[in-house]
Length: 270
Image (cartoon, rainbow, N blue to C red; front, side, top):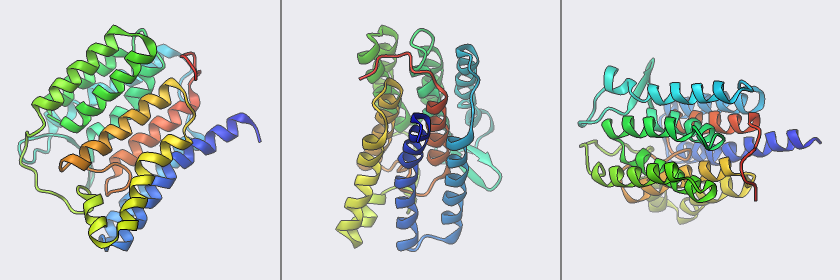
């Protein structure tokens, strides 16, 4: 088997294993069939992109894609919907997609592959996330900025990390959203019925992707984003990525993982 094929399957498993664990959680704990169907469809689309999707070879074209994704984060501010005083979602027919989880992984991966201009789409994304506001996504931006600043010795990424952390703290308690079962509080919900199930979900979310992903600058940044999203969901009522209901994180991390396969890794390797 070629190195490219091995890499493709490794990236596929990094998404499939936690997402399948999430589907098992939804089914076992009685989630409505519609929620299971949405996550299943998102996973199928994401896996297809990882296996067969292609990005432009030009770094300029990829940065343009990252910039467009960052601009799309402003769509909820213009189009809504609004809930509990925040605007964080993009409507896709009957399904609402969490914009930060959908778009930030792709932005981070492309930015990590372009140290010189990568901070620009990340800074633009940070502005949109602050206006939504979305403290969990801002924490993810801060975590990825810190990782990239450390690896690439970049003051620009360090500035993004600092700004993201400050904005996450400022916006942490913004909004009056009601907790959504199967989306927020997933580990608490699972632990109330089975400690083993909760432990398996923790491993699927925090350990499996990091263990499977190759050790590169881009994957370190993506892992930091996933851990930040998951960590914020543990300490506050934010959506759990991959293991809870939500098409956006499955699609978002799937697009990012597929993008990794298309990149030429010119950044520092371990």
